[in-house]
Length: 82
Image (tube, rainbow, N blue to C red; front, side, top):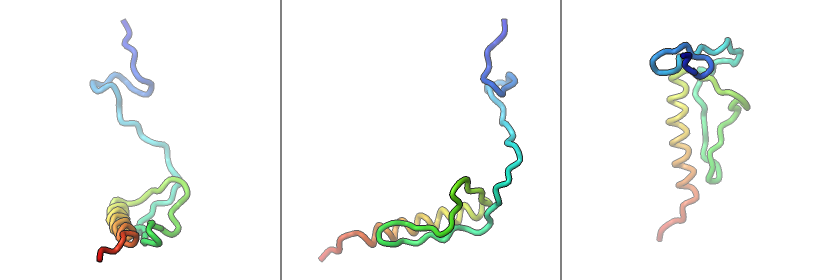
């Protein structure tokens, strides 16, 4: 009896295989984003409109910068305590 398998698999024990993606023309971003807190929100200048393809280092630094900018944005809209 034939066993049904999801499309793109070849019967490996997990039921799937890592599939390779076709070649991609998206340029690799090597510089991290430079987000800023502006009026209670986070803005990043010139991020791509579609897929964002970054090196691991650029992605990690961008994530840290985004978290810092998010914190600054929240702080800028908190009511001051007196």
